[in-house]
Length: 241
Image 1 (cartoon, rainbow, N blue to C red):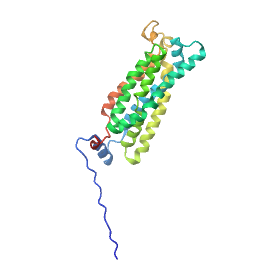
Image 2: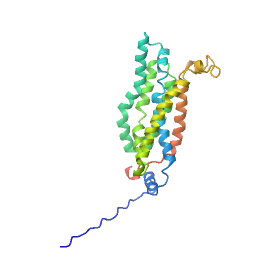
Image 3: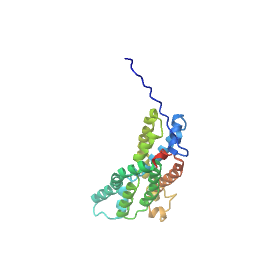
Image 4: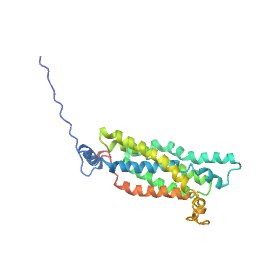
């Protein structure tokens, strides 16, 4: 008996008009728009999530000391640990939730919300006048900033399959650079009245809030990034809405 042969029809993907995800898929098929612009978006988003993580470590000891809450010098380190770990505690509690939200509503909204969270709560952290305000601002910054997981997913969705390693490598590289720049900003810009008295006079706003300047610089960068991410290509297909 002759074996019957069956030809499998080629599956043709249907694209919807005015669908952001379809436009991204078409661009990938045509090998268009997979260059520095998409890499730049990933860099901006990851840096916004990374810079606040480590920027406080050079000055958190002095910040807690200025709160005048520690009875002994050993207690300063304990309270500084609370401030430093509160952001990661918040992030660990809500990361899965933000991942679910990004699956339901798309990566772009979660990324933009996470960047705006940096603008608000990182700025308020720099204005902290007591320990509990500092801890709560860092905790809320971690809870409401869930962009790290979605940006990794985005890095795989925005590129063709053979270029996904490049997208994920960009996330890791940006994270590492943020962990270098963040502490540098915190170390150079904290207590500017003591370090740069010819620019920041004593008794000024910067003297009252000596740790605001590095937070403000990071928040200003995040604000600019949030505006830039308005043009972030969405990868959510219209059929999933």
